[in-house]
Length: 417
Length: 93
Image (cartoon, rainbow over all chains, first blue to last red; front, side, top):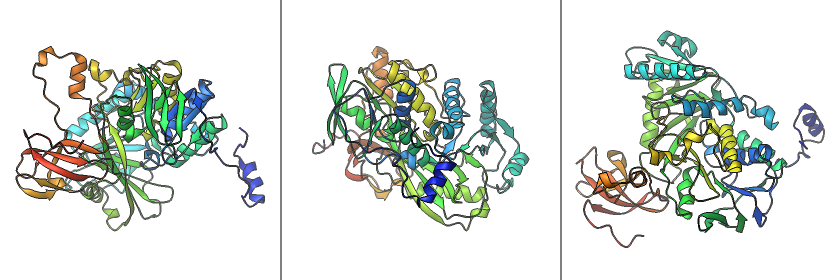
């Protein structure tokens, strides 16, 4: 790497008042033609370009981003990373990603602040207890660390939780994945952008795709706001806007795009050193390194591209947070925002070829794509380079909606991530 | 968050309603004749439009009746409301 970040580069740049840091990634104009174009410069798209260049030796690649990189859902999520999914296919996919996370800062020479602080999922009724115990067993059979905690152990692990049996949804126990945790979302996008740019990938911001040029059943290029760009391979990683791009190629996808909200509080001293999630009352919370509580709410029930979200959703989440953590009752919320998530009927992603040659989709991550960023990029790059899925993403093909071989993760994933 | 003009109850808050997704997806007349592709199309594939969308809503915490709405999904503005069985308005494409 030309400009490797290290303690020496830090000292060297400190001596020149930090005025001589190199730009972390380039800002090129699009060429006339590329071997492959990735549509969408979020974490997944940049990771795809990075692994295409690194592992599959494609050198002439572009990433097109209609806004700025990492400005979509990559910069809007609550940064939770875990792999304790129920089904074998999901366990394989998400644990592959988790293993990449564990070495990502070294791999990218960029501190993504990956913190394995553990993720705890609470059970509030007997069915939750049965489901979560079943999931714990399934996880362990797949080699994923998972433990069941009873109410006392939950209290011991996170003392600020209200475990009184008198609350509306009492805590009957929970599961814990200790290898799970959080990372700094912007750093993931920036780190992959820097790594990809270093290997010659053109990252083109403020360039929106307006059309896909097809010749019969294969793609020939993209119409963009910066003109026509020729290519034979298009990888679409456009999250909430996947259907919009699919429609340009005359395809329909099994997706619905909905606003998902999150909010952060004013910063306070360290109070919660893990991530606690509760699917039943729909509240999850962690604390950022700045000290803000990071709270995830649910999706709106209707299709919308507004990036806002409804107040009643936030209200429900905060009610649940207050009952579980009475200590937060006087906290002030600082910011609230929404991102558009593309939800599949089985709550599992699509990393797949399509029936149009050279057109690939990586979408349907719904409410929980951030955790999969490195794995998603790696497997999508493999799929694009070889025109065949990797065995870890073979189950996540588009054809499963025809064959009926769905990966139903609603119980394990649903809305809370 | 927005108001929906229920054709039976008048203007109410969106939180009283439940979204039924894309409208005018016709239930197959001969389910036994359908191929797997046609089933996938009927059950799962959606236009998921950014822009003007025809959709169904149910006033679930009110009169509990279903009806159709034309809404712009990029700003949540409702352009038209019409009852089940009525022809969709033609001036929106």
